[in-house]
Image (cartoon, rainbow, N blue to C red; front, side):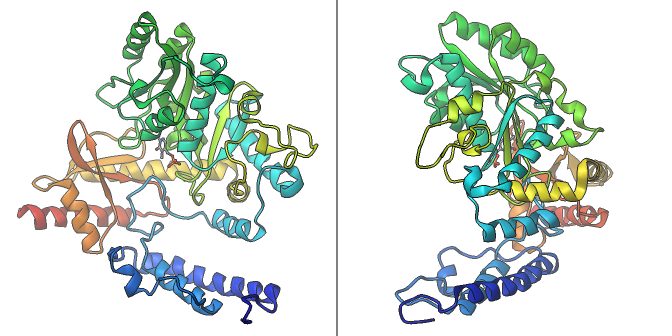
Amino acid sequence: MKKDGFTPDPVATLAAAMHEVGAIAARLVRADHEIPVRPCLDPATVVEEFELGLGEDGQPLDRVLHDLERILLASPATAGPRFWNQLFGGREAAATAADMLASVANHSMYTLKVAGPQVTLERIVLDRMMAIAGFVGGEATLAPGGSISNLGAMLIARNVASGDARDAGLHAIRGRVYTSGESHYSVRKAAMIAGIGRENCVDIAIDAQGRMRPDALDAALRADRAAGALPMMVNATAGTTVRGAFDPIDGIADVCATHGVWLHVDGAFGGSLLLSPRARHLLAGLERADSFTWDAHKLMGVPLLCSALMVRRRGLLTTHFGESASYLFQGDDEAVDPGRRSLQCGRRNDALKLWAAWRHHGDRGWAARVDRQLTLARSLAARVEGHPRLVLVEAPASLNVCIRVPGADATAVCAWLAREGEHLVGHATVRGETVVRVAVVDPAHTEADLAQLLHDLDRAGQALGGR
Ligand SMILES: *Cc1c(COP(=O)(O)O)cnc(C)c1O
């Protein structure tokens, strides 16, 4: 490194670093299986312990790469046999490789001019997703996560309902959004961002399985109309975050049609079940929705983040998210520049990883992947049912298995498993009760992993409950 801070040969330096990164990545992947649960580092001491501070003087690149490996090896493994904590997990090889290359290539996905064929790859994956979701002829964009996709849908629904909110703001309009009490918090947050207000997010009653009740939705819409409020959007969830429940889209679409309200389907989690002919009936009625969120970074194993937002009516994304900027959009056909349809300006290339995984699997491979996930979830539920002490809270609606550990608090059970270095698993609330929630999303899990999880949940229960 020269005194002025510039490397003498940036090309050779980066090429050598990439070579080393490949070796580090391979070691990380192996470590995820060898030491799947690592001690949780105390944020107060990690800086000293790992010497992470930033100072006046820089460090040589090989030292930095070494630091990266140390700290990554001490961070939670999200792709090992003991990770059940999230709605993502595991790695798709082609997608992971493509994502690393996307960083090297570093395109910003707003114009054909600076992203070239990458724009076409994005269109190809979105067209494929729209075909599978029944949104042919519509319009779509990739977004950094389901929360942003849901927000985008709500902004359009709001603009459409109000007529001129895009330009004039909301004035004194009291807009309302309807969603079930078990829907994702991003819906409420989007209502805040969209200027509708969190209090105008109406919780619609659910049935015993955690699905929105269309009759309760109808009653809420009638009451609001009578009170002079403006219904802007109904959010139906396809795969709720805790129970994996699917709101009945068809019945909800009937109500939306009666009241002329925008229907959005939040399939951030469960949208991927469309890929399985065995499971896609759970989203029956989707063809009647106005917009749809589908995350590829959850059940499809694509690295974070990768979410699709689609709208049925072509032109809506461009109309509501398009801006003119002569410094950026320089004369290309409006239809080819994805930056005319996105909420962001600069956009990371989230398409390449999804395209690479799809190229590798094909539709058939995806179906097999989803079926494997469903089989594992069902098997786990059956194992819990057959267990002498653990209790299955309810039959799983899709991939989420909620488990009661009698005699022990689920929060303490999860903390115990993490502390003992056994599993990372989360807890959640079902009908007022805190339970262990296992999301079976990594198809690399085995029957032996399932058995191990239950064995350790039982051990935790015995250790904590003194059974
Ligand atoms: C995960 C999830 C979201 C949020 O998606 P992100 O990609 O994490 O922003 C929204 N809705 C549901 C149902 C989810 O499961």
